Length: 181
Image (tube, rainbow, N blue to C red):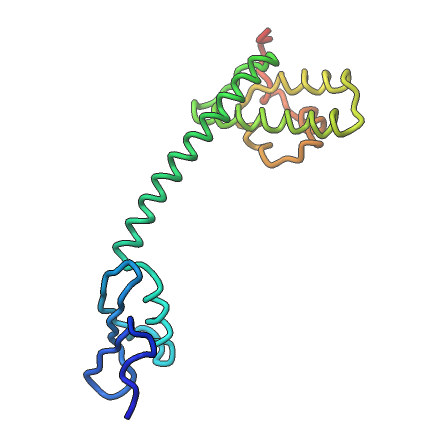
């Protein structure tokens, strides 16, 4: 006689015709029970898939957990972004960086990008490298004149050691025409 249930007790096929069962009752780990139509799976994959489903939460519990996780993640990202923005704004004020131009969203993002790139470049070139402080001041002054937010966003993935070449390559479109100081 063919086996009508899997070796595990939380998965039971429903048979209404000969052949491999297509409908299974799944006892999920969350405690809920669900009837699943596995006819879309190949016959030799159904029992294994049913066992796998039994090791997971039901659809409703899974969706609820993802919604909660998404809210928690969004809160965490917003907090981290606010802290990064505060650090970037403080740094920009401390080092007399000019205000950036662009949309509000682009300016906030570019301010963080500029802070990360310039501080990483200082670490790589001066602290860990062999660039002297006077040469760094020249690079920093050139970076200070770049006011277009889009330029800093475009450089967000640049290698910090490339900053001298990047600021030298910036065009007049990236630099404001008025002296902000």
